[in-house]
Image 1 (cartoon, rainbow, N blue to C red):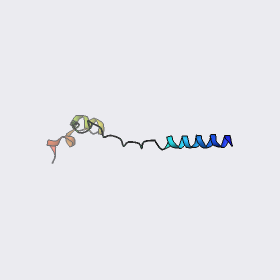
Image 2 (image 1 turned 90 degrees about the horizontal axis):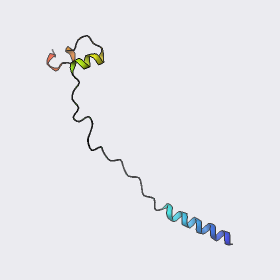
Image 3 (image 1 turned 120 degrees about the vertical axis):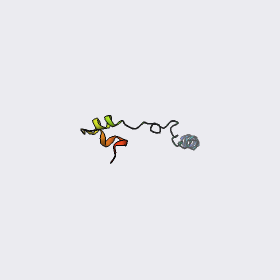
Length: 64
């Protein structure tokens, strides 16, 4: 009889603390977006990245 009371008291004690758990918070958005102020890639660098012989297709003033 004494052990039943101990188990019952332990169960009530654990259940009372289990209900106090706060729900998880949603993640906050970043304060400074990394790509908002990014400069465009220069034509010469784009030429090297894509492996072409000329930078003309990547230059904005050279469109036909």
